[in-house]
Length: 337
Image 1 (cartoon, rainbow, N blue to C red):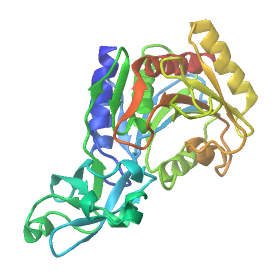
Image 2: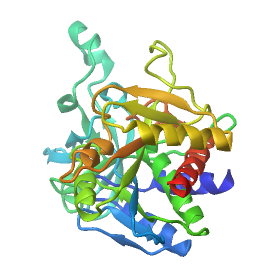
Image 3: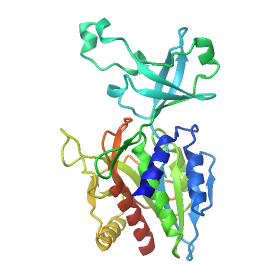
Image 4: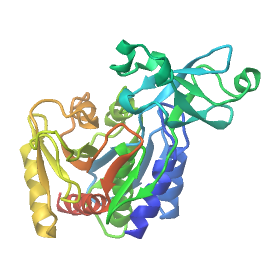
């Protein structure tokens, strides 16, 4: 688990929103250190290939971007106004430490009116984003020399080792899957494989799906393995919609996911002795699988999910066991195609 721990901490500490952030370069460096050739695409996805023997192409797609914010204004006192990129949970924003990625990266925190000055009506509601601000405590002139309108803002990361194999950090959605994809590709290069295996850490899944759409036009694959997170078990949520952590990845099953690939995933999990959970997805999946499956030519997809708690917060929780099992399942699936 030490390898996963190191990789996951490094990935979650990086940033990637839209065209901004250092996460793509970090992934490239990680792949090159493993002897793989990787490149940055025009949309800032990361693409690496393990060449096969039969000319077919298979995609492993894990989105690299995270939720975050964009600077929309700086008032005369130096308080920064922000809007969201992707869907954040506004209920937990007050008091969070943030990083503003300007000409240099600086820290701040999200503030709001103190509770003593709230009206009775204000005390009973969640503050919307326009009522919040980021405070860096810098003089306004110094701040404006570093931060500009349109700069990206992310949560400050705290990688925490919790009980047993559980870990907490920002951007587990979807760096947990990127870690699984990297590990799978590193393993696949050690053995002869029939199809060409394209690992792509896609950009902009959280708000536009651009990376996945462009990927499906570049690579005319016979199959795409999409790896994303899904909802972990938490109190007050129906058991049919959440999945326990450390109980294996979920296998997506639904109208847009061909049954033959689902069956092959089940077979692979049983042969490896890996526990798995079935996630019903009757319509769209809410992942890059939608962009890739409904591309120009149409690429059949299967979907693996890594359960995560507290999704779209800075304290997302995953199990290292689930990441390792997901990686093993990807490798076995590709070998059996």
